[in-house]
Image 1 (spheres, rainbow, N blue to C red):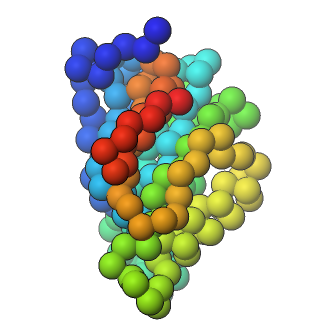
Image 2 (image 1 turned 45 degrees about the horizontal axis):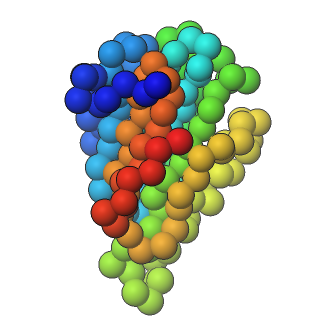
Length: 166
């Protein structure tokens, strides 16, 4: 039976941020994913969870920004998330992944397509790392809030007044 999140310590993940935890009494949460992507990783054997909230697909041309904050970009943030998960005892072949966000926010004519580009970049990097996404809710035009319980790997998605857990 899942633990109520009010009994757990909240670890907030901001925009262009990443957190990894092995504390079974905590959960990771990020708010208002619009065109950004939230990548959730959980290893059920080692009970390690990680959450990355990246803004942009590619650091090319933004090397200094990526050096200062690698969590801003998919191509620098996702490899770092893998690395930090493994440093805490997770193994790639056991990882359960989720990917959320990638909406078209404030882009009615879809000129910039940041959400679509973020989604494609994340999927490509995950594919290159031989992992598949088990839980996915991307695209559309709504923001999402996601959380993951470290001990259980239970992911909760909140969007448009609805809450779904898996």
